[in-house]
Image (tube, rainbow, N blue to C red; front, side, top):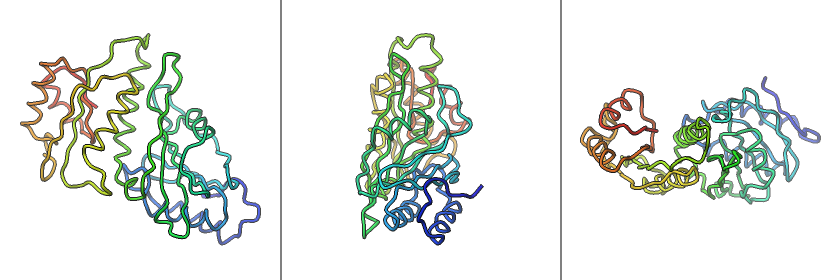
Length: 287
């Protein structure tokens, strides 16, 4: 149902209608948030001087919109929770009217309790909302007591936030959680891991292939993997069959065999056909 939840007392109907119209905004698949949506949220937040929170599914659809106070917002329950090795499939985006995008202790608690894909904060900067900045927190693994470990990333400009390959990061985290929870004990040998990125001219906002691999390394480190090497393939465009190219796949397969690599994490989505081609070269798992 297209409704606005939370503290609506004193909010004009015109503002409520603006918020309802946000349900029609679709966040592009794979993006953390769009600049279009962030700017609209910043504008309304500054006008009413209250936090606004919304839920976004992995398909980019806005599912809930909530109005809070000037320093907090009460979040609705997340339906359809998954097992401990899976996240909720929902990310929470909310505004901070004071311009500070740093996540609070309450933000981290909500992130863990609801198993959000991410808790995203927009530090609203007025009157030039394009100067607003974004941070986000994510569950990145489990500790020895099987409690969630969280990290915070940012701050980023709106353009930098748009350039983050969010869907790939989520898939990587869920693979890490699945490996940790499928074992009878977390006290297992660390996986030797290599990271693979592609530089094909699609980087925006100063976000480089090296930066993206560094982000993946932080996630892998937090989960207890040991990153032993990184590879970046530079091409005019991805290979339709092998993504990084047949020659590079063969190079990686040989390296993985020689170094006894357990896990290869790609900084992009690899389809099932491509993954099968990679596995013909060695026995390590791919993400």
